[in-house]
Image (cartoon, rainbow, N blue to C red; front, side, top):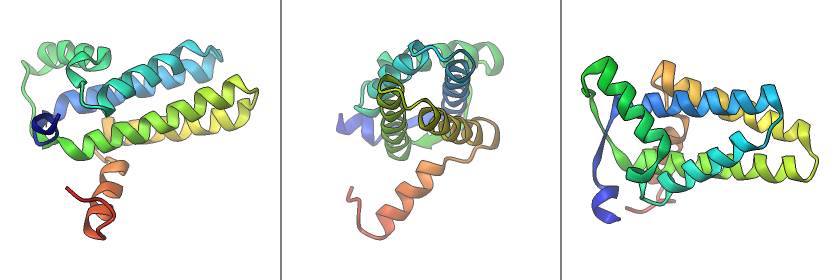
Length: 144
């Protein structure tokens, strides 16, 4: 996993994955169906624990990136994105637990926050969790 942690990622694929996350969470908000949240939990878990090559969202993003950009994309540093996936996992697990315990409004609010962060990444190339990662590194909370 350490090799993968020090790797770079294709920036286009990362932004496409974020858009897929946003769409999946929007489907949850519109339908109230728990299946999209379960899919989010699974995909975030795969990416958060260093197995991104098995991520269905990453696979789909790769196909879209190949079709739209011939597979190109600016390389970006992977560890902040892994940290972001862990934050996404926390959000999606919280949404799942809140939904299953009947706390639908708080689940919807968290889904809205997740959608906002995913759209910031996909449309604006702004990774909120990456800023948190950087701050935590600078203050010594996170160690390499």
